[in-house]
Figure (cartoon, rainbow, N blue to C red):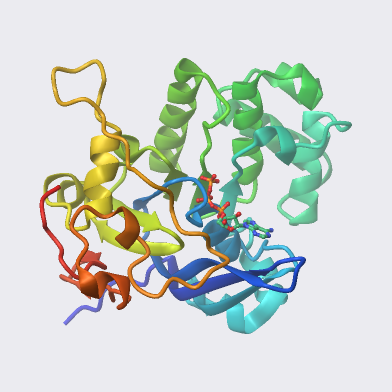
Amino acid sequence: MTSAPQPLVDARDVNVWFDLPDGRELHAVRGADVRVNSREKLGIVGESGCGKSTLLMALMGLLPATASVSGRIEVMGADLLAGGERAFRAHRWKDLAIVFQGAMNALNPVIRVQRQIVEALELHEVASGMAAVHRASDLVRLVGLPEGVLRKFNHELSGGMRQRVSLAMALACDPRVLLADEPTTALDMMVAAQVLALIDRLTRELDLALVLVTHDLPLVTRTCDRIQVMYAGTVVESGTPADIYHQPQHPYTRLLFAATADVHSDGPDPVTILGAPPRLDQVVPGCAFEPRCPHSQARCATDVPQPQSAGKGRSWACHYPGEST
Ligand SMILES: Nc1ncnc2c1ncn2[C@@H]1O[C@H](COP(=O)(O)OP(=O)(O)OP(=O)(O)O)[C@@H](O)[C@H]1O
Protein backbone atom coordinates (compact mmCIF):
# COMPACT_ATOMS: atom_id res chain seq x y z
CA MET A 1 0.00 0.00 0.00
CA THR A 2 1.43 3.44 -0.91
CA SER A 3 1.06 6.13 1.74
CA ALA A 4 -0.29 9.61 0.90
CA PRO A 5 2.42 12.14 0.01
CA GLN A 6 3.50 14.36 2.88
CA PRO A 7 1.90 17.80 2.64
CA LEU A 8 4.28 20.75 2.28
CA VAL A 9 2.34 22.61 4.96
CA ASP A 10 0.38 20.78 7.62
CA ALA A 11 -0.96 23.10 10.30
CA ARG A 12 -3.42 21.75 12.84
CA ASP A 13 -5.65 23.42 15.38
CA VAL A 14 -3.84 26.76 15.11
CA ASN A 15 -4.95 29.40 17.59
CA VAL A 16 -3.60 32.95 17.72
CA TRP A 17 -4.27 35.44 20.53
CA PHE A 18 -3.17 39.06 20.57
CA ASP A 19 -2.55 40.81 23.91
CA LEU A 20 -4.48 44.07 23.89
CA PRO A 21 -3.18 47.21 25.63
CA ASP A 22 -6.00 47.03 28.21
CA GLY A 23 -4.87 43.56 29.34
CA ARG A 24 -7.56 41.60 27.48
CA GLU A 25 -6.92 39.11 24.67
CA LEU A 26 -8.23 38.99 21.13
CA HIS A 27 -8.64 35.44 19.83
CA ALA A 28 -7.95 36.08 16.12
CA VAL A 29 -7.54 32.49 14.83
CA ARG A 30 -9.57 29.71 16.43
CA GLY A 31 -8.55 26.13 15.79
CA ALA A 32 -7.74 26.51 12.08
CA ASP A 33 -6.21 23.70 10.01
CA VAL A 34 -4.23 24.40 6.83
CA ARG A 35 -2.90 21.61 4.65
CA VAL A 36 -1.15 22.29 1.36
CA ASN A 37 0.15 19.57 -0.93
CA SER A 38 2.82 19.90 -3.57
CA ARG A 39 1.64 22.07 -6.53
CA GLU A 40 -1.75 22.56 -4.94
CA LYS A 41 -3.58 25.90 -5.01
CA LEU A 42 -5.49 26.59 -1.81
CA GLY A 43 -7.79 29.59 -1.55
CA ILE A 44 -8.69 31.05 1.86
CA VAL A 45 -11.69 33.38 1.78
CA GLY A 46 -13.72 35.34 4.29
CA GLU A 47 -14.75 38.84 5.31
CA SER A 48 -12.32 41.46 6.50
CA GLY A 49 -11.08 40.74 10.03
CA CYS A 50 -11.82 36.98 10.02
CA GLY A 51 -8.16 36.10 10.65
CA LYS A 52 -6.83 35.27 7.18
CA SER A 53 -3.69 37.43 7.37
CA THR A 54 -3.03 36.42 10.97
CA LEU A 55 -3.16 32.75 9.97
CA LEU A 56 -0.61 33.33 7.16
CA MET A 57 1.66 35.30 9.47
CA ALA A 58 1.48 32.43 12.00
CA LEU A 59 2.60 30.00 9.25
CA MET A 60 5.54 32.32 8.45
CA GLY A 61 6.40 32.86 12.14
CA LEU A 62 6.11 36.61 11.57
CA LEU A 63 3.52 37.57 14.17
CA PRO A 64 4.29 40.51 16.48
CA ALA A 65 5.59 39.92 20.02
CA THR A 66 2.09 40.60 21.40
CA ALA A 67 0.80 37.40 19.76
CA SER A 68 0.77 33.89 21.21
CA VAL A 69 0.21 30.80 19.10
CA SER A 70 -0.84 27.25 19.90
CA GLY A 71 -1.34 24.15 17.76
CA ARG A 72 1.03 22.48 15.36
CA ILE A 73 2.65 24.09 12.31
CA GLU A 74 4.60 21.64 10.17
CA VAL A 75 6.44 22.72 7.04
CA MET A 76 8.02 19.95 4.99
CA GLY A 77 7.75 17.63 7.98
CA ALA A 78 9.45 20.00 10.46
CA ASP A 79 7.46 21.08 13.51
CA LEU A 80 8.12 24.83 13.48
CA LEU A 81 6.15 25.83 16.57
CA ALA A 82 8.06 23.27 18.62
CA GLY A 83 11.37 24.38 17.04
CA GLY A 84 10.75 28.09 17.70
CA GLU A 85 12.27 31.02 15.79
CA ARG A 86 15.29 28.97 14.74
CA ALA A 87 13.06 26.43 12.99
CA PHE A 88 10.97 29.15 11.36
CA ARG A 89 14.13 30.89 10.12
CA ALA A 90 15.32 27.67 8.50
CA HIS A 91 12.15 27.46 6.38
CA ARG A 92 11.01 31.08 6.00
CA TRP A 93 11.55 32.36 2.43
CA LYS A 94 13.43 29.16 1.47
CA ASP A 95 10.43 26.85 1.60
CA LEU A 96 7.59 29.18 2.46
CA ALA A 97 7.46 32.75 1.08
CA ILE A 98 4.83 35.46 1.25
CA VAL A 99 3.65 38.33 -0.90
CA PHE A 100 2.03 40.88 1.38
CA GLN A 101 -1.19 42.79 0.95
CA GLY A 102 0.43 46.21 0.66
CA ALA A 103 3.45 45.89 -1.63
CA MET A 104 4.05 49.58 -0.90
CA ASN A 105 5.08 48.70 2.65
CA ALA A 106 7.05 45.59 1.77
CA LEU A 107 9.76 47.51 -0.12
CA ASN A 108 12.32 49.83 1.42
CA PRO A 109 11.66 53.37 0.10
CA VAL A 110 15.31 54.51 0.14
CA ILE A 111 17.03 51.52 -1.49
CA ARG A 112 16.95 50.79 -5.21
CA VAL A 113 15.16 47.60 -6.30
CA GLN A 114 18.38 45.83 -7.31
CA ARG A 115 20.03 46.39 -3.90
CA GLN A 116 16.92 45.10 -2.13
CA ILE A 117 16.84 41.89 -4.13
CA VAL A 118 20.62 41.40 -3.86
CA GLU A 119 20.48 41.94 -0.09
CA ALA A 120 17.72 39.34 0.22
CA LEU A 121 19.75 36.86 -1.84
CA GLU A 122 22.88 37.48 0.25
CA LEU A 123 21.04 37.39 3.57
CA HIS A 124 19.62 33.97 2.73
CA GLU A 125 22.92 32.79 1.20
CA VAL A 126 21.33 32.06 -2.17
CA ALA A 127 23.93 34.06 -4.11
CA SER A 128 26.43 36.87 -3.55
CA GLY A 129 28.40 39.44 -5.55
CA MET A 130 27.89 39.35 -9.34
CA ALA A 131 25.96 36.08 -9.12
CA ALA A 132 23.37 37.87 -6.97
CA VAL A 133 23.23 40.80 -9.42
CA HIS A 134 22.58 38.37 -12.30
CA ARG A 135 19.98 36.52 -10.26
CA ALA A 136 18.22 39.84 -9.51
CA SER A 137 18.01 40.50 -13.29
CA ASP A 138 16.62 36.99 -13.87
CA LEU A 139 14.02 37.51 -11.15
CA VAL A 140 12.68 40.82 -12.50
CA ARG A 141 12.45 39.28 -16.00
CA LEU A 142 10.66 36.29 -14.51
CA VAL A 143 7.93 38.58 -13.17
CA GLY A 144 7.59 40.37 -16.50
CA LEU A 145 9.43 43.60 -15.68
CA PRO A 146 12.12 45.36 -17.75
CA GLU A 147 15.61 45.34 -16.23
CA GLY A 148 15.48 49.14 -15.92
CA VAL A 149 13.29 48.59 -12.86
CA LEU A 150 16.37 47.41 -10.97
CA ARG A 151 17.69 51.01 -10.85
CA LYS A 152 14.45 52.47 -9.53
CA PHE A 153 13.19 53.35 -6.07
CA ASN A 154 9.82 52.23 -4.73
CA HIS A 155 8.12 55.62 -5.36
CA GLU A 156 9.10 55.48 -9.04
CA LEU A 157 7.09 52.27 -9.59
CA SER A 158 3.37 51.83 -10.29
CA GLY A 159 1.30 49.68 -7.93
CA GLY A 160 1.40 46.73 -10.34
CA MET A 161 5.19 47.02 -10.73
CA ARG A 162 5.65 47.12 -6.96
CA GLN A 163 3.58 44.00 -6.56
CA ARG A 164 5.70 42.28 -9.25
CA VAL A 165 8.90 43.33 -7.43
CA SER A 166 7.46 41.90 -4.19
CA LEU A 167 6.75 38.69 -6.06
CA ALA A 168 10.34 38.62 -7.39
CA MET A 169 11.63 39.05 -3.82
CA ALA A 170 9.35 36.28 -2.55
CA LEU A 171 10.66 33.96 -5.28
CA ALA A 172 14.31 34.85 -4.65
CA CYS A 173 15.09 31.75 -2.56
CA ASP A 174 13.15 29.30 -4.77
CA PRO A 175 10.40 28.51 -2.26
CA ARG A 176 8.08 25.51 -2.57
CA VAL A 177 5.01 27.32 -1.26
CA LEU A 178 3.93 30.88 -2.04
CA LEU A 179 1.52 32.59 0.34
CA ALA A 180 -0.25 35.50 -1.35
CA ASP A 181 -2.18 37.78 1.02
CA GLU A 182 -4.73 39.78 -1.00
CA PRO A 183 -2.01 40.38 -3.60
CA THR A 184 -4.18 42.66 -5.74
CA THR A 185 -6.08 44.71 -3.14
CA ALA A 186 -4.66 48.11 -4.04
CA LEU A 187 -4.64 47.57 -7.82
CA ASP A 188 -7.18 48.53 -10.46
CA MET A 189 -9.12 45.71 -12.12
CA MET A 190 -6.96 45.34 -15.24
CA VAL A 191 -3.65 45.35 -13.37
CA ALA A 192 -5.08 43.04 -10.69
CA ALA A 193 -6.05 40.53 -13.39
CA GLN A 194 -2.53 40.68 -14.88
CA VAL A 195 -0.87 40.12 -11.48
CA LEU A 196 -3.18 37.18 -10.74
CA ALA A 197 -2.48 35.68 -14.17
CA LEU A 198 1.26 36.08 -13.49
CA ILE A 199 0.99 34.34 -10.10
CA ASP A 200 -1.00 31.56 -11.73
CA ARG A 201 1.57 31.10 -14.52
CA LEU A 202 4.54 31.17 -12.14
CA THR A 203 3.02 28.63 -9.77
CA ARG A 204 2.71 26.25 -12.74
CA GLU A 205 6.13 26.99 -14.27
CA LEU A 206 8.00 26.85 -10.95
CA ASP A 207 6.01 23.92 -9.51
CA LEU A 208 4.92 26.04 -6.58
CA ALA A 209 2.08 25.39 -4.20
CA LEU A 210 -0.04 28.51 -3.63
CA VAL A 211 -2.11 29.76 -0.72
CA LEU A 212 -4.21 32.64 -2.01
CA VAL A 213 -5.97 34.74 0.61
CA THR A 214 -8.76 36.98 -0.62
CA HIS A 215 -12.29 38.30 -0.03
CA ASP A 216 -13.17 37.13 -3.53
CA LEU A 217 -14.97 33.76 -3.42
CA PRO A 218 -15.69 33.64 -7.20
CA LEU A 219 -11.97 34.26 -7.86
CA VAL A 220 -10.78 31.32 -5.75
CA THR A 221 -13.56 29.16 -7.16
CA ARG A 222 -12.11 29.81 -10.65
CA THR A 223 -8.42 29.51 -9.78
CA CYS A 224 -7.86 27.18 -6.80
CA ASP A 225 -7.92 23.40 -6.31
CA ARG A 226 -9.28 23.67 -2.77
CA ILE A 227 -11.06 26.36 -0.79
CA GLN A 228 -11.30 27.13 2.93
CA VAL A 229 -13.98 29.56 4.05
CA MET A 230 -13.17 31.42 7.28
CA TYR A 231 -15.54 33.20 9.62
CA ALA A 232 -14.58 34.90 12.90
CA GLY A 233 -11.23 33.12 13.14
CA THR A 234 -12.60 29.66 12.31
CA VAL A 235 -12.54 27.58 9.14
CA VAL A 236 -16.27 26.97 8.65
CA GLU A 237 -16.12 25.01 5.39
CA SER A 238 -13.48 23.33 3.18
CA GLY A 239 -13.70 21.53 -0.11
CA THR A 240 -13.01 21.63 -3.82
CA PRO A 241 -14.45 24.53 -5.83
CA ALA A 242 -17.13 22.11 -7.12
CA ASP A 243 -18.09 21.16 -3.53
CA ILE A 244 -18.16 24.74 -2.36
CA TYR A 245 -19.99 26.10 -5.41
CA HIS A 246 -22.49 23.31 -6.07
CA GLN A 247 -23.01 21.89 -2.59
CA PRO A 248 -22.16 24.53 0.01
CA GLN A 249 -23.06 23.15 3.43
CA HIS A 250 -22.49 26.19 5.64
CA PRO A 251 -25.05 29.02 5.42
CA TYR A 252 -22.20 31.55 5.50
CA THR A 253 -20.67 30.04 2.35
CA ARG A 254 -24.01 30.24 0.55
CA LEU A 255 -24.49 33.83 1.63
CA LEU A 256 -20.96 34.71 0.51
CA PHE A 257 -21.80 33.44 -2.99
CA ALA A 258 -25.11 35.29 -2.94
CA ALA A 259 -23.33 38.47 -1.78
CA THR A 260 -20.91 38.33 -4.70
CA ALA A 261 -23.52 37.58 -7.42
CA ASP A 262 -22.61 39.22 -10.74
CA VAL A 263 -24.55 42.47 -11.10
CA HIS A 264 -24.01 42.33 -14.90
CA SER A 265 -25.61 38.90 -15.36
CA ASP A 266 -29.28 37.98 -15.67
CA GLY A 267 -29.07 36.07 -12.37
CA PRO A 268 -30.32 37.24 -8.96
CA ASP A 269 -29.10 40.55 -7.51
CA PRO A 270 -26.34 40.32 -4.90
CA VAL A 271 -27.62 40.08 -1.32
CA THR A 272 -26.21 41.84 1.73
CA ILE A 273 -25.22 39.66 4.69
CA LEU A 274 -27.00 41.52 7.46
CA GLY A 275 -25.28 42.25 10.76
CA ALA A 276 -21.58 42.13 11.56
CA PRO A 277 -19.17 39.37 12.62
CA PRO A 278 -18.65 39.03 16.38
CA ARG A 279 -15.85 40.93 18.08
CA LEU A 280 -12.91 38.59 18.48
CA ASP A 281 -11.97 40.09 21.84
CA GLN A 282 -15.08 38.49 23.28
CA VAL A 283 -15.91 34.85 23.95
CA VAL A 284 -18.48 33.45 21.52
CA PRO A 285 -20.56 30.82 23.37
CA GLY A 286 -22.05 28.99 20.36
CA CYS A 287 -21.69 29.23 16.59
CA ALA A 288 -20.09 32.58 15.75
CA PHE A 289 -22.39 32.98 12.72
CA GLU A 290 -25.58 32.34 14.74
CA PRO A 291 -26.71 36.00 15.10
CA ARG A 292 -26.62 36.44 11.29
CA CYS A 293 -27.72 32.98 10.24
CA PRO A 294 -31.13 32.63 8.58
CA HIS A 295 -31.40 29.02 9.83
CA SER A 296 -30.18 29.34 13.41
CA GLN A 297 -31.91 27.28 16.07
CA ALA A 298 -31.64 27.27 19.85
CA ARG A 299 -28.64 24.94 19.97
CA CYS A 300 -26.62 27.23 17.67
CA ALA A 301 -26.47 29.95 20.34
CA THR A 302 -25.00 27.65 22.98
CA ASP A 303 -22.95 24.86 21.30
CA VAL A 304 -19.89 25.52 19.18
CA PRO A 305 -20.27 23.35 16.04
CA GLN A 306 -17.31 21.01 15.59
CA PRO A 307 -15.94 20.39 12.08
CA GLN A 308 -17.58 17.37 10.42
CA SER A 309 -15.35 15.64 7.93
CA ALA A 310 -16.71 13.99 4.80
CA GLY A 311 -13.21 12.81 3.78
CA LYS A 312 -10.79 14.05 1.11
CA GLY A 313 -10.45 17.51 2.62
CA ARG A 314 -14.22 18.10 2.64
CA SER A 315 -15.56 19.45 5.94
CA TRP A 316 -17.94 21.96 7.49
CA ALA A 317 -18.74 23.24 10.96
CA CYS A 318 -22.50 23.72 11.23
CA HIS A 319 -25.20 22.04 13.34
CA TYR A 320 -27.66 22.17 10.45
CA PRO A 321 -25.60 21.86 7.28
CA GLY A 322 -27.19 22.04 3.86
CA GLU A 323 -30.24 24.09 4.89
CA SER A 324 -30.98 26.20 1.82
CA THR A 325 -30.76 29.96 2.17
N1 LIG B 1 -1.31 43.12 15.97
C1 LIG B 1 -2.59 42.99 16.32
N2 LIG B 1 -3.00 43.29 17.57
C2 LIG B 1 -4.30 43.13 17.93
N3 LIG B 1 -5.26 42.66 17.11
C3 LIG B 1 -4.90 42.35 15.85
C4 LIG B 1 -3.56 42.48 15.38
N4 LIG B 1 -3.52 42.10 14.08
C5 LIG B 1 -4.77 41.71 13.75
N5 LIG B 1 -5.60 41.87 14.81
C6 LIG B 1 -7.02 41.53 14.87
O1 LIG B 1 -7.13 40.14 14.54
C7 LIG B 1 -8.34 39.92 13.80
C8 LIG B 1 -7.99 39.25 12.49
O2 LIG B 1 -7.30 40.19 11.67
P1 LIG B 1 -6.70 39.80 10.25
O3 LIG B 1 -5.95 40.98 9.74
O4 LIG B 1 -5.96 38.52 10.37
O5 LIG B 1 -8.02 39.57 9.40
P2 LIG B 1 -8.16 39.42 7.81
O6 LIG B 1 -9.20 38.39 7.58
O7 LIG B 1 -6.83 39.19 7.18
O8 LIG B 1 -8.71 40.85 7.40
P3 LIG B 1 -8.43 41.68 6.04
O9 LIG B 1 -9.11 40.90 4.95
O10 LIG B 1 -9.07 43.00 6.32
O11 LIG B 1 -6.95 41.75 5.89
C9 LIG B 1 -9.01 41.29 13.65
O12 LIG B 1 -9.97 41.42 14.69
C10 LIG B 1 -7.87 42.26 13.85
O13 LIG B 1 -8.33 43.50 14.35
